Length: 160
Image 1 (tube, helix red, strand yellow):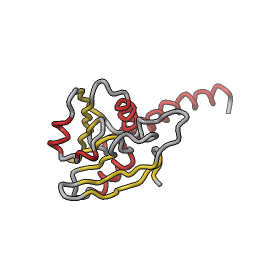
Image 2 (cartoon, one colour; image 1 turned 180 degrees about the vertical axis):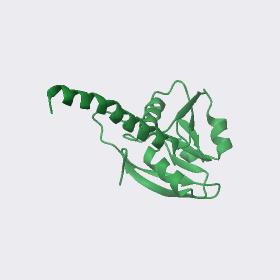
Image 3 (tube, one colour; image 1 turned 45 degrees about the horizontal axis):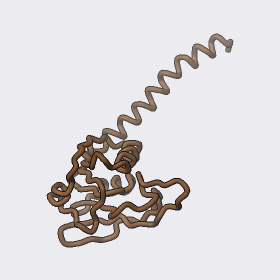
């Protein structure tokens, strides 16, 4: 094969490879429901968490509100599990810095619950990364109107 023939083959292969990658990404994103995140516009860590879930393939609509408390109440988020932002996806509430993998598991398993929460703002959780600080271990809690239980345990963004 001559050099010009190899170049022609490579030039033809590049668009096909790009199409395959983009098609695979769009099909993965199509499989996930759209997420709506309501957050305080003054909160910087919320943007970090939104970037985390977008990188995991979620499409996100963002609503900025100085008072997220009424939404938390409407969705049944327990006060002790409150954090800085609240998301809605697939009929569930997602409160705080819940890792994207836990959300995907929730959507796959579809348990009878109101949602998932990471109470507070644990260092190292998605959106709460602090350079030079080790990530904390924290629980992702599955909650309903009458029950709370540990759904998963994480250190930083890694399940343990």
